[in-house]
Image (tube, rainbow, N blue to C red; front, top):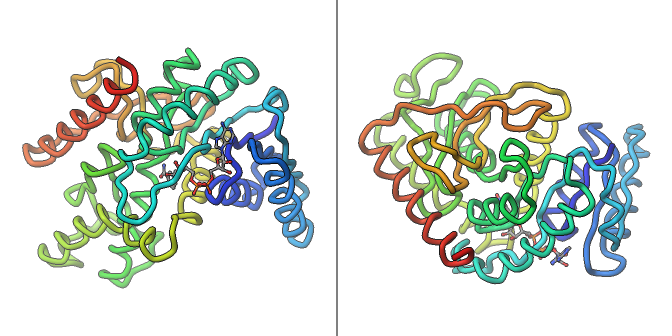
Length: 304
Ligand code: NAI
């Protein structure tokens, strides 16, 4: 089996590197640009041989090559430029995601599909509907990246190892992201024992906007998204039953259907093995519902 990555730009290459150095599987990079996936593959293979990791990364411009994939990652499409929101990419990327999803349905129907292209939640829904794949096998990566940013702020403020932090981020991967401060702890100890309420509020706000800061400074986010996708791939390939946030197709959970949005799930060899329904308080529920409305509106605009 292979992990296939469709879209070999900045994030696609980072996903390939992160999957390969975790020794998860062989990796195939695909792109419409001639030479780009092949060049990225060569570069990564040179690192792997030096590290003694006997995985092979290949590059291709032919979608048919994804046919023996266990996991397909869809990361083709435009990234946002400084000052843009993820939703500004909606119409352009919906066309790309529809096109690529049809190829995935033709060549790798039995794989598990991880969508990365933004705006993440509507794009995951487009991929789900266009491929016709089972809802447990299609998911988006957004919450895990938001979580890595959330944990990074907590680590800095509490001055503890990131390993000791447990936290969760749900809702839209976008304007209505919901870092769940109330569910955070450090090795089982409530966050308030380490960080004041005022600093917690600042962390909440910073987590929601830090991606735009990175984009303003360096033009794109690259390394942390690659790592987040590799965490998901590892949970699936090693059947870890990890509890992580993903953009999941909902079918009645949280009282909604016909949408993909960030929620905690159990991730294992069968894909999404269970959606976990959290008991949100009124403030959290309000933000989550704003997220649902925002994603629903976007879905209506591209799949009327
Ligand atoms: P990039 O511009 O570096 O790479 C995109 C690649 O997609 C290009 O190489 C392009 O040739 C390729 N592509 C376009 N149409 C294609 C098609 N039909 N088939 C195959 N390849 C195709 O962009 P970057 O920075 O890698 O970002 C990719 C996407 O990932 C963007 O939509 C970005 O917003 C999103 N993203 C999502 C994150 C998340 O947390 N979900 C985090 C970071 C980026």
